[in-house]
Image (cartoon, rainbow, N blue to C red; front, top):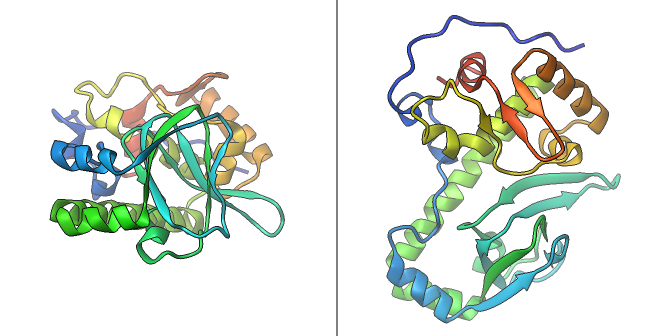
Length: 250
């Protein structure tokens, strides 16, 4: 059975959460083309704009990875289906993100699925045009390497969480990861913060390596302990600083 979270002594909050989160550089999320308007313009000029319906698959594992995608608006999950039929979610990508990069570099077979969680607007760029951008813009290659490094670091953290953390820790870390930009932009992070991605219990279970029943039980305990508020529309971190202290992230 899960233990209740332990209250720890608190220190005075700093001016900016970016100054105190330990080693969390990989959680910083900005528009892939932030500060690079010419590169974005070139990318869009050789891409095809697609409107994706909610729940529509953008690509599936086993397909050839001959293109990559930039999200103009909406949310996309990338995941695999296990041999037992369970869903394992790796990432939830949002506006400003690029996904489907790994396979297009070598025209490899897709190892994951991409499915729209909401209605999405995306730009799809084919392998030839993608390689042309790489040859024309060194900044494009640099941004790709930075992006991939962040994702590798994030996945390493997830492996560590699965090996070392109980379910309460896993859930709270997931909520912090998804809320990082909101938290780091806040000067008064004693205040409640809503998780910006709408998550079902199935999504949470798929991203934390546990079953839905366990997620339901732990969410109820965290709610009873006053750390979160849960509704059909959102999850709110009621005491983000206390959660961060408990997780030893500040």
